[in-house]
Image (cartoon, rainbow over all chains, first blue to last red; front, side):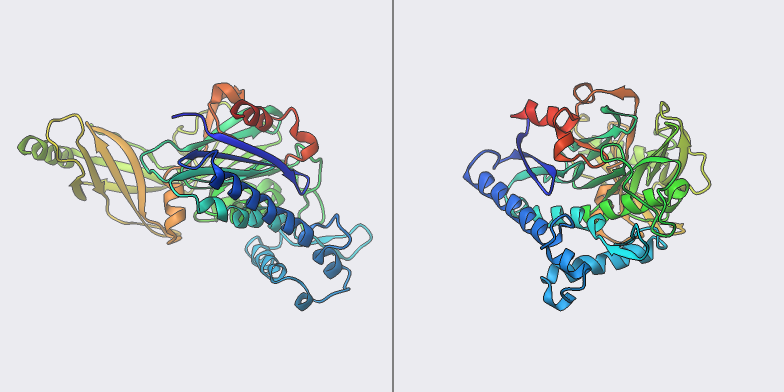
Length: 261
Length: 155
């Protein structure tokens, strides 16, 4: 199979990478879909950026506007955040402990995966075309031919980001990784307001990037319990890299214990 | 066709396979994920005979594929049922036909998307990867990242 056609742009402070293979890779339809993808992501950034004082989420956080005064996507994202908080036993929250006490509204842990799932819609509409769309290391992909080749997703080694620790072959689905390699220590366990210990990165494979991203962050927040928590999430597989370099695979492994003949 | 049918029946009569559906095990970073499961919560779904169908009837022996569906196994998450595809006496694919989290998309993903630890950490090129998943790469950190090398290679 020929190499996929690639597109790269930046939005939300993140590199967005798209790989296409199949019928529409470099024609007008493909380029129009890519423009639409970036348009959706820029709009999400305008609404949800905690770095923009005038974003709906910033105004909501300061109490200048109620939920009813925000675009409907805000309620959707906060509902996802509430579900994630419940299902993670509170380790994940969109209300993070603030420096001077209290909490600050920061749904970033929900927004990225959810936004990329939404933004991929115009690419899903490209007939007979496979895609893999990544936002800063979290990605969603599709393969139409079940007998074809899967997308091969490399899991970065948190101790050496120039190298690959594992490979996940994904036909259709999403992969997200949480860790602190590139941005320093910015993830906390919402129950303790402290950075989790013992874990270097968590990679989660799931059906939607929304949930792969949330579960990667939530598992990471569980620190030493990251693998045990992920194991309780049916429909997910994943890889936990501990800070001593050892790894745990959490997966519906699907290997044959005995092979015929 | 007679030859094909005879081969299929022979396969089914001798087929006894256990499929590790849920596994949880710890390994060091250089150990392959195919090491035997040692964790406390593995689920083995038995496939013993089950229901077989041929998906190729063109005769000959080279392109015959058989699918065999096992019995549903009870797990802590609910019933799990697996299906094997066998070609020329070798299991070529395993998929989960009944999955506790009854979601067709997840079922497909998890039948195929096991993270496979590489024996030694590899650079992107020798691992033959399409994309990189890692802790959030910012635009500032993108230059020089593995992903940017992949993107450049494809442009």
